Length: 323
Ligand code: DGY
Image 1 (cartoon, rainbow, N blue to C red):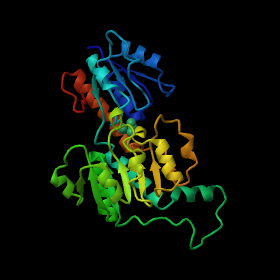
Image 2: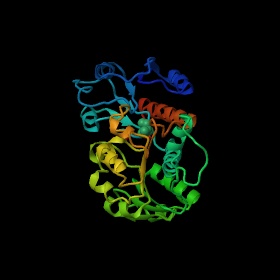
Image 3: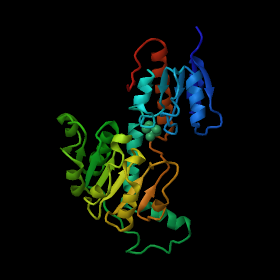
Image 4: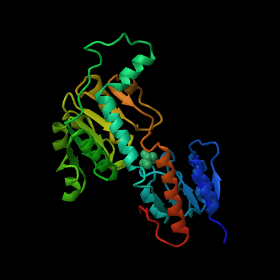
């Protein structure tokens, strides 16, 4: 049997690339740069499977094809808001993702950001590195205590729940949840969490708010000026979900005029471009989309893609099909 022709759009961990090559006729994008719409269009016309990542936008220009050769987009990552699901469905293409295997590491990073923002770790690191530290003093870089505070979690899926576990069991935080559907009482009980009906209800009662909802058009600018205005003046906003969920101009105003205490972002609207207004905010921690960036998660994500592809091409329903 001829092996399915598979395009990997970026470099993956070498153990995963080796295993892919055992099962598939694999082509690697050795330059490890994001593909252009033209490259993508050509790929969709010639490969049985394309394995995109968050840096590969797959929308109308890429899918202007009468009949693509590609039958499956096996996404390397859990979020798939870079794929226009309606257009993909029009072409009958299966889409899979890689849930579970990155939830713990992404929640670890969200907790890292929360702690960095609360304890002004970014400012401190910059000060030491730039040779500006003049020594210990009682009033230097005073932050906010985390233990026992209230954490609001918007989006209570796998990553949101892992965040709650860390915050509640590790730091004794009280957990408030907002989610688009009702969360089972036994899931809430695991972290003593309370679900509220709206973001409007959650914002004013939290010391920290962490975003764990999907991106995409439906959640674009979910956090806008009016919702930021509901946050306490000493509260912090954390985002490891998707950049477009926050209106960054509104956030920069809130940070600049200190209507909130601070923020920490791992994701940006239009990344890797960073809105220049954000760079000027000292009370903002910024990381380069590192949520799942551990050896363990990145390998497990790749092996999960391979499982999905094998299921698909061997006639089984892929475990992580999302459409
Ligand atoms: C994910 O898995 O969604 C990460 O953000 C990378 O795409």
